[in-house]
Amino acid sequence: AGGKWEKALQISSVMARSNVELDTIASSAVISSCEKGSEWTSALQFFSFMTQREVELNTITFNNVMSALEKSGKWEKAWQLFGVMAHSQVQADTISFNAAISACEKNREWEKALQLFTVMLQSKVESDMITLNATISACEKCSKWQEALQLFGIVGGSNLQLDTITFSAAISACGKA
Image (cartoon, rainbow, N blue to C red):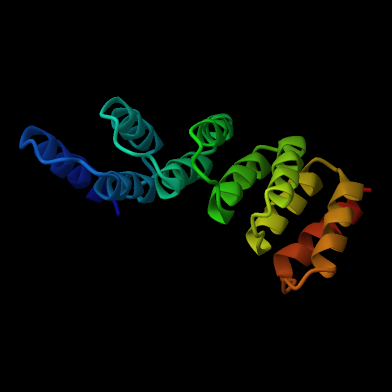
């Protein structure tokens, strides 16, 4: 995906100069290319360009930018964008929550991860193993073993299949008790 993001930006620039409408699908594809190329600044700049051009923003657009931010350790920006998403009345999905929770987990923001997990449950958005593992791991990294084990209990009582990451995070949390 190295230089593919640059090509995607060039093509979108040609589209704009040619007076071809830059729609949500094309714009999301550009941001996805930036995300795959680990170009969070370009993804964020293009997102800003989309809002200036009044291109409709959707869940996929937000998810791609949040994923780029999360993978680059920019948890504050991912967290802020999650808030913008809600303010924009764009419906967050499992991927949206996972990107935001994973960003919090990587940066030891266990309280924000738990807050997002709670909002997710209240919003009736389906969680998956990525959601739970990232939330448990966020607690474990901050020695919040009781919270981690409480989440582990939720996983055990759900229909989700426990995996090595879940067990490892729970065991590690116990080691920090």
